[in-house]
Length: 94
Image (cartoon, rainbow, N blue to C red; front, side, top):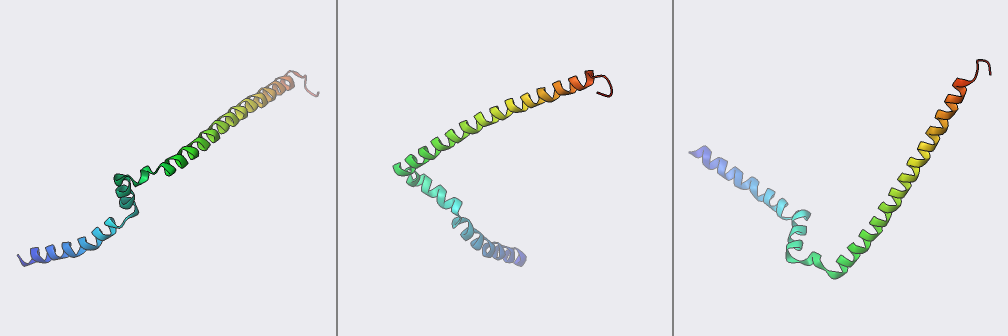
């Protein structure tokens, strides 16, 4: 019975600092602010919309650039293949 009481005291002493760390974490603070509605600030929402617009523009630019690079790569591959075909058709020594 005495060991159970000692174990209970140990659990309580360990739970106090762990609980303090968890309650003071930035994740919990952010969660509480969100629940209170502090994250619904109109200025913050406007800023987020502006940043989202910029990111969407960058994604569109990168998509276009990727497509251009794909087309250029295909063009170079066709050039190399046609050069290989021409060199294969040449008689030896030329």
